[in-house]
Length: 619
Image 1 (tube, rainbow, N blue to C red):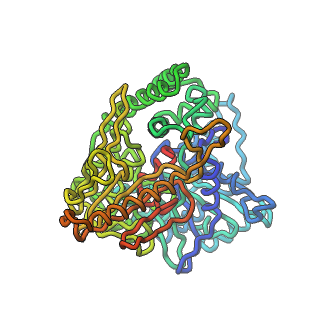
Image 2 (image 1 turned 135 degrees about the horizontal axis):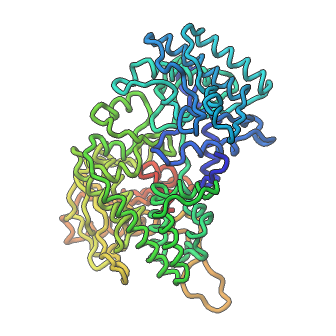
C-alpha cells in the first residue's frame, strides 16, 4: 500500500482523517463505532486509508491524533489473509459472535507478536509461512467482554499506554464462510459483528472497514457497536495529470479564459478522470511498483493522449476530448441498460439509517450491489450503475441519464457544461421522488414540484431577457436549456441569456436556475484596458446573483403591464447553484415578493445526490 500513489486532493484526505478521528455524537448510548468505506472494486478504497492515517497522525498541533496503524486483510493480500478455520462459526448466533471476538484478538496478536520473515527463495516453506494467518476457530469462546479485556492488555503490552490505534479491516466479509441466501441472519454475519465489535469497544482504538458491502451492524442502536460511513476521497484530475507524463498540460485554460475553453477543459477533466478510474488505476499503480506494463490498451491510450502535446491549446483540447469520448463511448455502449427499482431514489441519495436502507434496499433492489458512500455520508451507487440503469417507475430518469451520457461520449458537445447536465438530472429525480425541491436544508426555500418530466426548452426569444413567455411552460416539468449544438469545427450557440434549468409549479411559482462552476473568488476581467490601466476583477457567482436579481425583478414588473394578463398569478424566482463557492448560502426577497437564492458549497453539492461523485472532476 505504501508504494501506491493516491491522487486525491490533500484537503479531501484531511477531511477523511477528520472523519476517522471524530467521535460521532448521537441521542443514544453507542458502545462504539465501526467507520466504513463502501465503493465498487478497484475504486481506491483500500489504498485511501493509509494517506488518511498519515494526515491524522499525532503531532504537537494534533495531540489526539493516531499513533499506530495496523492493516488486517481478510482477502486479496497476496496470501496474508486472515481466515478462521474451520470457516463455519457456531449455529448459535451468540456463540458465533463470541467466536468472532476471540478470532480478532488472535489476529491482532499475530500482527503485533508474530512477524513474518518471507524467504522468497524457499518455496517449500510457503504453506508454513502463510499458516500463521489461519486462525483456529475457538469452540469454547469467552464472553465478548473478556475478549475486549484481553485486547486491551495486548495493546498496552505492545504499544504502551498512550496509543491511538487505527485498525484497518479490509475485505471484512471474507473472514469466514458467509451464506449468500440470508446473509443478515446466518452465523457468519454474527461472527463478523463480534470481530469488529471487539475492536470498536476497545479504548484507544478506531476501526475502519473497507469492502464493496456495508458492515452488517446497526446504524444507531443503544448499547451496541454501530456503523458510520465515511467518504472516499475522489481522484483529483490536476494531481493525476501532473503525476502522469503523458497526461500533462503545460498551459491549461484559466478561470479568466473564454467560456468555450473552460467548457472544453471541464468536459475533458470529467471524461479523463472517469476513464482512468474505470480502466487505468491498476496500470498507473503498476508503474509505481516498477511492474512492467500489462495493459497494452491503456498504454496506447496514454500514447495517443500525449501525441497531441504539440498542438495549440484549442486543438489539443478538442483532440483529447475526442479521444476520451471514444473510450467512454466504448465502455458505456458495452454495458447493458438494466431495469432497477428505486434507482431514482439512490441517485437522489439516502441517509444511512436502518429505516431508509430497509425501505430502499429491498429484495427487489438487491441488484444495486455497489453501494457508494458520498462525501456527506449519504449512500448512493456507483456512477457506472447510475449510467447503466433505468427506473421502471420514473421515466425522466432515462432522459437525465441520456443527457449526461452525451457529455461523456459525444464529440459534438452541447454548449452547456457537464455540471449543468448533472444538476438537471439530479434535480429532476429529486423532484420525482420527493415531490418537492428544497434548495436549503432548512424549511424555507422549498417548492412543491412533482417532477413529471425532463425536457429541453427555452424561455426567451432571440436571446433577449425582455422577450419571454412563461405560459408555454408545462407545470411540474423540469426544463434544461435547449442550446444550438456545435459541430466538430464550430462552437455551439447560446439561446438563453440567463438560466440553465427552469420549472413552473402547479401554484404558479416559476424558478430560473443558473449553475456556477466558479469557486466565487475574484478573477481578472477580460475587457480591453487602456495602456497602464490595471485589470479589474469580478466575482462570477455574485455576477450571476445580480443578473438574476435584476432579471427576475424586471420580468415580475413586466408581467404587471397591459397585454401580459395571461401571466397573472405567476411569480418568478431565481436560484444560483454554486457548489464550489464555500461562502454561506444567502437569500433575498424583492418588493415584488419574488426571491433570489444563492445556494453555495455543501448546500449545493447535496442537491447533486449520487452525481456528487463527479463534482471534483468538473470544478
